Amino acid sequence: MIHIDDSGIPGEGLAVYAAVSASVHQAAAFERDWFGLRAEWLAEHGVPVDYELHATRFIPGRGRPGGYNPARLDRYRMAQSALDLIGSHSGVTVTAVHSSVSGDWRRARAASYEGLLRQLDRELAAGGEHAALVVDGDGTEALYGQVHTDVQPARVVRPAQQRPAHESLWLQAADLVAYAAFQSVAQQENRRFMWHWYSRYLPKAKTPLRY
Image (cartoon, rainbow, N blue to C red; front, side, top):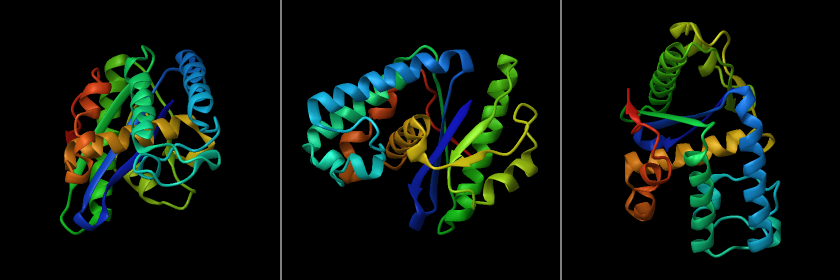
């Protein structure tokens, strides 16, 4: 299973897609460790285990998980611990790509997703594997089916299934990876503290590829 989410700057036409993958027999171990980490957050910071981790809200300090408002530094450390778990887990693989099309967010997203799909297909072929894709969405985005038809990846037999992120810890993990990858590429000045997160906490991952 490969779970996918995106990030970027719509107004500038910068789009980033990230994928977090694990084989079926490795997924349970990661899920167990993820819920263990979330239990620690509950005990130490009052963040409920089932609270949706949405990076662009959680990291800057928006939202009050469980009625609490953790300090921003604590939020940073929680996000870092989640990335560290993703990056250090032997059964998890991370892939990220980015594309820029000035002033055209949809074209940038299409190019970035196409790049991700092609890269994943190559990685699956190299490993002799096949995969199903799940992407954050409500089922209304036509882009994923269109790109799948254009690329026709040999190792991904059907277009990505769209599923709301609040239903999947894997999509929340992909969201966090996508935001870290985005900040490593965009290097927004007000997120300078995040510029190194992708390389530091996901050391096994390749630098986000440009398409």
